[in-house]
Image 1 (cartoon, rainbow, N blue to C red):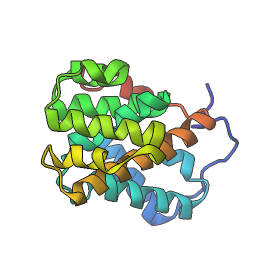
Image 2 (cartoon, rainbow, N blue to C red):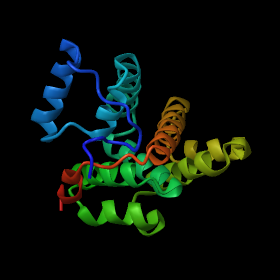
Image 3 (cartoon, rainbow, N blue to C red):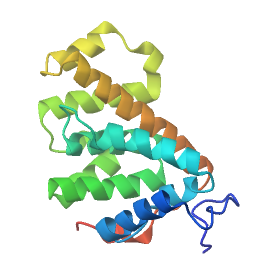
Length: 188
C-alpha cells in the first residue's frame, strides 16, 4: 500500500503552510489521524481550504439538522453511490454520534431497515432522490419534508449536504481514495 491517499500522484505541499499544519495537528489530536480526504486535497492549499470551508459549514455549521442527521444523509448518499471512502468514514461518524453501531451498519448496507424517526426517514428518502433523480424532485417531495416539520431552510440544508456528498463520492471513487484504517474500528 502506498502513502498516497489516492491513485493519483499528487503529493501534499511540503512543507505545509502554518495554518494548514495547525489544522492537520488539530485533526491528529481530535481524531487520532489526518483524514485521507484532507491529505488528498493538500496538493493545492486553495483547493483544500475551499473543500474544508464548505464541509465545515455544511456538516458542523448552524442548522436545525443535527450533526447525526447530516452524517446519516452523508451515509445514505454514499451508499447509493457505493463510495467506499465515504461509507467507511461517515459510517464511523454515525456509529460514534448515535452511540449505536448497528445504526451505522444499517445505513451503510440498507438504510431502509434502519430504526430511524419518521422525520429522518423523510430526509433520507429525499436525499436518495437528490442522488438518483434530482431533476425529478417536485413540490410534493419538498412538502413531504415540511409535513415532517422541516422548514424551507432545513430542506435547503438537506439538499446541500446531499449534493456535497454526491460530489465528494464521485471524487473519492474516481481517484480510488482509500479510507484511513482507523475508521474501521471506531465506535464499535
